[in-house]
Image (cartoon, rainbow, N blue to C red; front, side, top):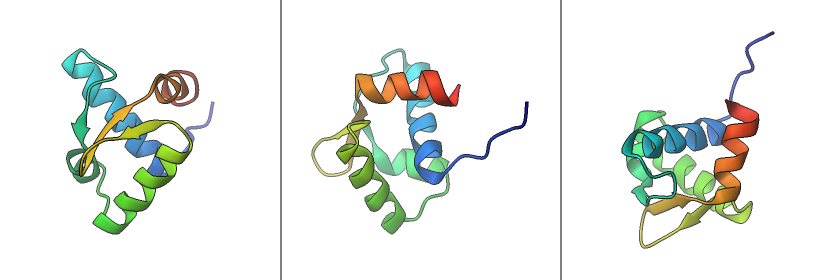
Amino acid sequence: MNQKSLTPDEKFLLKLYQTNLAKGDLLQEIDSRIIAKAVSLKETALKNIVKHLAQANFIKKGADTIVKLTSHGCKFVEEYLM
């Protein structure tokens, strides 16, 4: 099977999922800047990605730069990206 390249949005979601999985709680809140740095996103791109992922109900925005996966976002990562 061919390796599918990921969009920046998918990279962000996957890294968020992996980070939370390592911490033991998939629905934990985390600073989006940490994830953005890990996947080499600039601040402008980060803001747009967070906005669009929140509109698609993959993440939920909290105070400032805090985000967390929704159950819909977890399901997407597990089914389509893993």
